[in-house]
Length: 430
Image 1: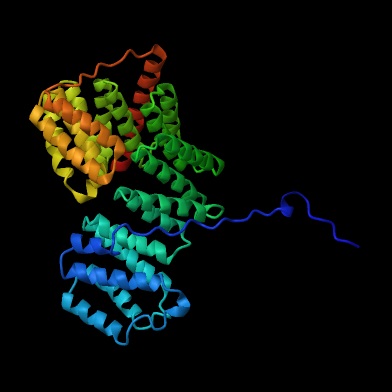
Image 2: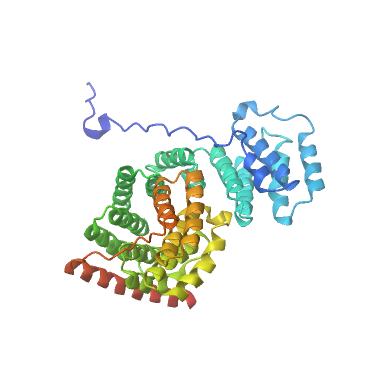
């Protein structure tokens, strides 16, 4: 008897497409950033360890036997002893030195753990490019791990390595599909933010909607909140305020009181109202959001927005206090991802109050950083602000007429966010 032909989906099994190729680091000599961020002798030792590891990771397992010269492991250990690194570095650097003794039998999981420990050390040392180099190395070694690909993508994005970031995000999405839906959704969210920063709004909107659909389908409520949160930002940038408020309300519902991103959502709402010239409403949100935001780039952005809103509201004392706290943060490497945009906001506050020289200085610094990091949107705004400051011309932002229904939505949303943040702060303090 002849076997019947299969029918339906079983007859056409889905073919898994290969993941995009592994992105390359942008620097000409892989890991060279370490030598710029970390002084000798420690920088040389870390660079040496990274180069050894990358050579091992990029060599097929069957060809690793004679990867290093005889005695290479002992040479690495002597260099380690001579450098006498801090205690936190001994373990991971010793593990990488031992790799040279028998590279064929070295345990990949143990080596990747050591490299990720070095990335965490670089983070604490405020060495973002070194952290990216080690995170990139870990993702190369564990090439099928979508979470490591995501980590490399986010760090590349924050370092303004745009092509590298996009490559890692797309690789993470492909690796995660069908096996790690959380990483799959985060990949689209991260890619959307990447496109937004480089000014590709249609692509940003499209991939963020894909993230939203994935989060809803898999009932990933926190990620649904994050997608709505970003879509709120996209909507208000496009002038679709009713759509934006709807996304903000959905994000608030999905996050709930205890979510760590709730203060960021409140901050973004305040930014929008400040941009519209509704400074009192904006400051009422910043008042409750600012104490909940962590130190670093998020706090810098919040302070810069307080500078602009306080200037718009004519509150000179609040403007001065926030400006004094914000300016030093713009020079910190850990705040590099938000420094240019924050300086633009500070310049807007300066110009609003007629502080022309201050505004020109802040706008010029923003322009330089935005050019260096290829941040198209910030670059455009910084150029306009620099011209305004040079010519002593304040850009007066008068709040446009607000339809009654939109005003009601905004006021209700502001009340809900303040109440949620108050509960969030109380729970955190307890």
